[in-house]
Image (cartoon, rainbow, N blue to C red; front, side, top):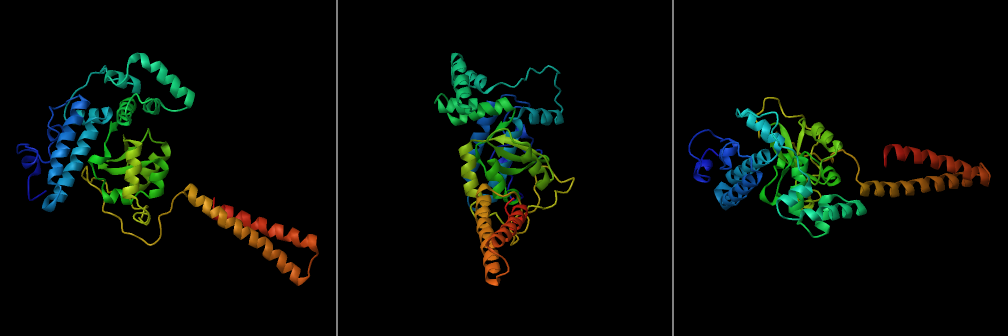
Length: 335
């Protein structure tokens, strides 16, 4: 952004600190606590900056769009916002009254459902073994986005519309397709020492461990619509595009500026190692069964042609050989 002050010319932010703090960037008053207002301002600014996302300012506009997304995600996550505000000198009382609400309480407060409908929704969810978020959508009482925003409030997480942003390529390169498909997630970018990852629900510990192992930093989950994440995976992880990325790259060096990312790892011919998908396991088991059958047939035929054993001995020996081959394949090929 050296050729143009995008903050001043595109967002109307007067000269001063560059980059500006998150509140100035999103054009809200300092320490604004209304998450809806922060998200509304973000959407307006996002739409405005997208007008410049062509020609010579393509890179500058995309960088600014991601800065806006990072600011919004930070200020709409209660815990991240408190940490950020304290860094700006804000003091909090011990009793802040900031208790997390449930999905249903959020939907009632936003006039999406009536309070007398909550018991019926809970019964519907219990009877079908699904979450309340999914129940209100299946009952057609709320849109998927409204229900997901409610879940974000309950989990004290931020909500992101993936249509509004573009994940960073070097981050996408370092998390294999099989991982994002297994967890239904999408890595976005690094911000203040954490990797922002879009998820459909509260992430499993195995995903958090995976992120820490591959990136050397903890993850910060944000919620997105399941459909949006699936579409993004199909778009950014098309077969053959990122399967060959190196995934054991070293962790980013300490002391690196917040909001920046490590250089993209070089591509290698060998695919990244990782847990097998269900489809891969099934294919390997089928191949293994063919190998086992041929080991049995080959052993029996070999003994038969040599005339070294009788019929019972031939099949007994063949069974032993097939058993050994089975053990080796299970331990090394399709475990």
